[in-house]
Image 1 (tube, rainbow, N blue to C red):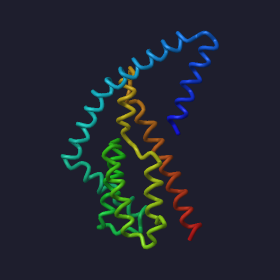
Image 2: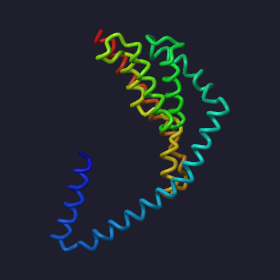
Image 3: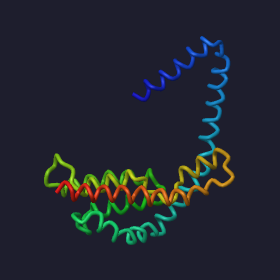
Length: 192
């Protein structure tokens, strides 16, 4: 569907430019945009390599395990039906930790594994459990404290202070997660 929309915009742009006799401007804009895209992609390599290295150090040093322990009380509150020693809880904690550290690529496999283990606890296999809904709500609430990808993009785009977005990201994460958890818990009570 997105491909069709993009194709509509591109063809529509060329038709509009042809009607207004601006085909050269569209062609120039096309090549300029492609040049900027390549520059941005190459600029991202250095910053992403740096952050991935930092995240690997955090993982190898055991800091991620400390973060898991810090998140355990919150996980118990959010997922009361999941036993603390169940593999689902470990996958949930690893997913949340990776997301908080801005490791979206590392968080995805943990998220899939968490859903797989939560399905094992599900008595009605064709209906999502409260824990599954809560996990989905928390994940989609943009759980991030260190937005490494955004910092990388801002750095590649030439920002003087690419990391200045961290403060607003923390605030946005707190508010969006609070809203998601509040709505989730409210709907759980209403639908009982």
